[in-house]
Image (cartoon, rainbow, N blue to C red; front, side, top):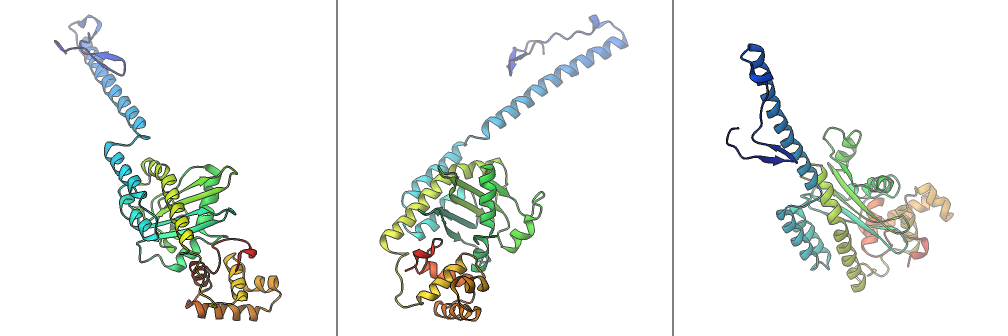
Length: 316
């Protein structure tokens, strides 16, 4: 310590520290006290360094490094070129991967009626149509549950899947081939959800950093998605309807299927027999070249035969 220049750590000066040991009497007891005082001084300095490190870490939690700022700038600049669906896919599985590496993105924005228009952009061959329709089911679907939980807390929902603390989520996420979920929503002035983004098969730690990335990217991602859907609507990509593909009654039955009704419930609503409802569904599935009710609804939506959500008066 002799000859050293005083320094400061967190407002504490150290350097030329005078260590007292009861006058440094030449006794065994005095030497022990001197050593104890010296160890205490070293401990104080170590604690000061530790506190500074913790404070710096807490300070940086809500800040981006220069490298992260570069990634974000490239993501935002690339988003300006997105107008078509394949543009959006390339953007999500290109620049966005630099901050949130993932295989599956489920996202959606609400239409003028407040119904969420779900979209998927996946590079995972294990995530099939059946998984997708179960995830977005308006009743017991995963997205609906996550949206409700998000509305209750207003914070991102990070579920690491197979990691400790995931509880009963592990089996459900595995069954749906999602593995994990990083979900964030965006609210509207009326308190309802205006849009959401849900990343799955994410390949990074589920920590505060991921939460920060979600919070920053969420508005830009949803704005880019809305621009893409608006462009598709203007150019008629989603509104072209193959003439005479399925009948008005078949569309009506599929509309109730979309809303989660069973065959019995649809029969009661339309005043038909359950056998008639089954026949309408079978004919619709055959014309649409699909094998399940959920696939029929998805194909009808993709062809513009019915909206993703809406009232019965929406049907053409």
